[in-house]
Image (cartoon, rainbow, N blue to C red; front, top):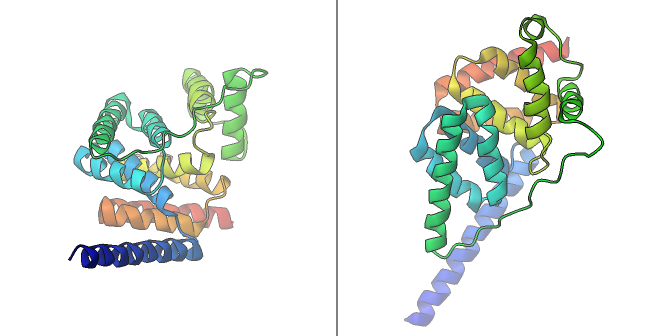
Length: 241
């Protein structure tokens, strides 16, 4: 009987591995997001909209997909810049609970790399201005920055210097997180459309954007996905002009 069970489990494991491999291959072939990127989508979305029960599931799935502890931590930290400290802190607290539960089950998740020091030859403002300009495609300008110059300084110095300057996540991953969060929050359409453009500037493709929004539709809600799809259409139309 023990041999039959062992044989059955071996066949089951092989089948599951084959299904997972085929699924990932299909994702890569279609040009959509890979499993780790899909994990970033749901983690960012549920942190931003405050659904901690669904976030707990998303965190487990993200770790199972191969995201490291530090990569997920970085997504949760970045979320405070878009969803506020309370939801970011709630996300981090939820993640701590998930890690503790997994450790009790004997699951050893990869910690991952730490952030490298920021460049010694540049101030945070200089670094942030450089990153912001690269992501936007031109120097940031507009009436809002003249009206509230402190906001301009905070964006350059802190958001793009301190946060985007950390190399635990690449720019594409950070934009996947940002777009997912904004798409799930509501009431931030100008920012969401802007970040679709930034996402394209990082090299994300239309197929990847569509894949992201399909995850939003399936996991967050049709209303949120429909709104984001409309804005994506406008972003694509503007880029085609």
